[in-house]
Image (cartoon, rainbow, N blue to C red; front, side):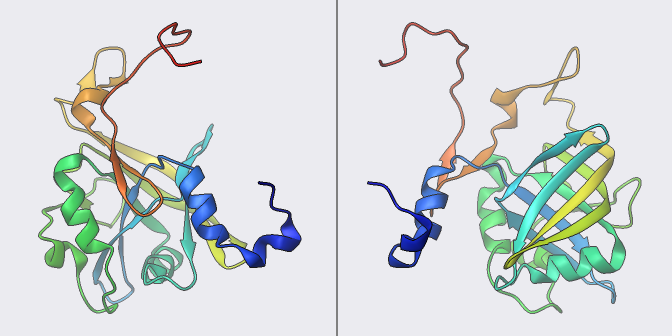
Length: 198
């Protein structure tokens, strides 16, 4: 099947794109509103945008309740990207639901809070890795807003850290986002690999 742009309206392109671009890492973003309310929301349109300077990016949809995150980041110019491990998956899911801007997702999801070191935004205490960011820019892309943030602080649990500045993937146990579901990321291999199907 080949679908051209002029046929997109005949298909659910959201499902086709999200079903193919997998597994996606999840940025569990903590932010603070202008009135001081803590916010916590997951985003799977997330990746590293640059290594010099180290910059992360995630995309916020205009129709999602996560627009609270966008407003907070624009106001405070700071946020924290927390990595979601398997043990935090249920809390992350709870924080993804629609809540009013006055509600604190940390409290609702039962997520423990730690102070960040370099930004005035809390981080998820149990997260294996948390990256403190200062806003670089927001790029409007159609119905979405792409948020880019420069990393100014990096937290990693001692049990996740390996010598020579490596992250232990077996202990990180990250959660991947599929189309509508989630995936375990537990098995790893190197290339070339003669055991792969042909």
